Image 1: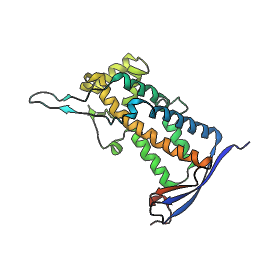
Image 2: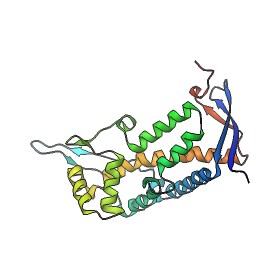
Image 3: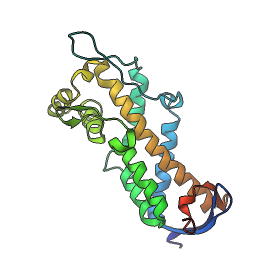
Image 4: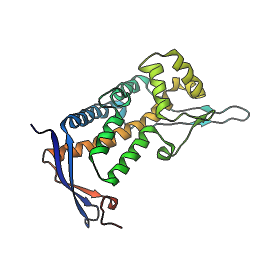
Length: 230
């Protein structure tokens, strides 16, 4: 029995000038996890809220002598709740398809530094690091737009009912909790997390096509993937 899934393919630059042969070998146990991740991401893509390409919206209004107030567009909570449930396989670290577990599998077995740079950038998007999302929103020096804040909210109000965590989250989110119970800011963060998930899923889908012989090359690659480029 073959214990690894072996792939041989070529990278072709977008200018057609450069070509590079790549060999990847992934243990079957890890390969199954990658495939499960892709299957779960397909389920997430199929949710109506995601299909409508919701981009997230954060808006605040300042009036003379008043504190700023959030005023985001109304979100259908029932539709968005389905998204939160579909996200669970990717955001809970005890799940087989936890985002970072899958990212680490790809990072380990694709020994090309340019790809690993991409994985780092995708990971930064998932974590909502300020360099990746180009925005920062803080309360008493604590960042609201972060994976930790996102998970604290879900564990306090969605996945679990943790009262202590709920009090902490309500204090951190401040006025944003008065705006549709915090749904707009959570939806805003979910957009980045979902985009990161889909980035990994697209890579896995390409590898799946290569593994079964449907593709022999990956076209339109940036020049950074080729060692001969200076």
